[in-house]
Image 1 (cartoon, each protein chain N blue to C red):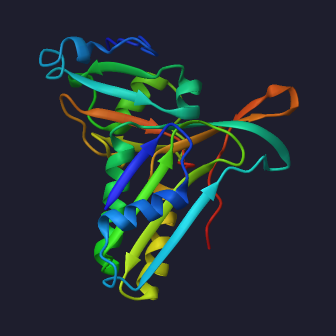
Image 2 (tube, rainbow over the protein chains, first blue to last red):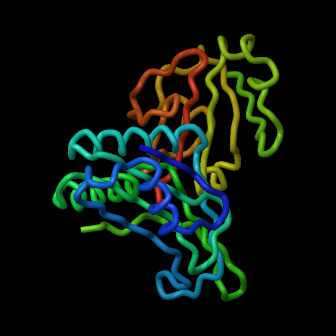
Length: 147
Length: 100
């Protein structure tokens, strides 16, 4: 299990490949599910030109470790990788990567969604958007439900 | 009730400077995101003997009603509003999370 916060752009697909090659043995796993969340240039009918992702150093990492660890155990995962941006983010840049590996597809599908939903509702991150119109700023009030 | 309401947006907190002396007598309080902007305080300290639970901490600093949606953590773990606070605890208040 690996969890990382990044203050720079990252390539989720390169991360998945590098992690798999480093941490997993070919022939041992049968499934991998990946979720990548990317910043849009619009939200609630407004054009968004940038975003700032605040977090709670210490608690954010602890909460992520706790929820990923619980899902690894519950779904009998072989490995899990979570990368999440902090700081300034621009439209088109990836915000979050969740990748999980298991013997069969059900565990991977279930765990990937479970981790993402738990992250969305419990990991202490807050988005502040800068809008194109008059350069206004606003906090995103809450996340939309995932199901 | 004697309160120290200094905001430390960029300065190191007294706890960083005087760790060990201060931790045994105070509750460290933090506010994040929109709550930090609303209350006007990022980080402060209050005497541990002036409060019993999380609700007391909020009242002592914010002097305003506590919204139902406000989330609380004590020492980096989610906690309820009636959770007891003790010397050296870090109590954080923040709005619903919006990561991912």
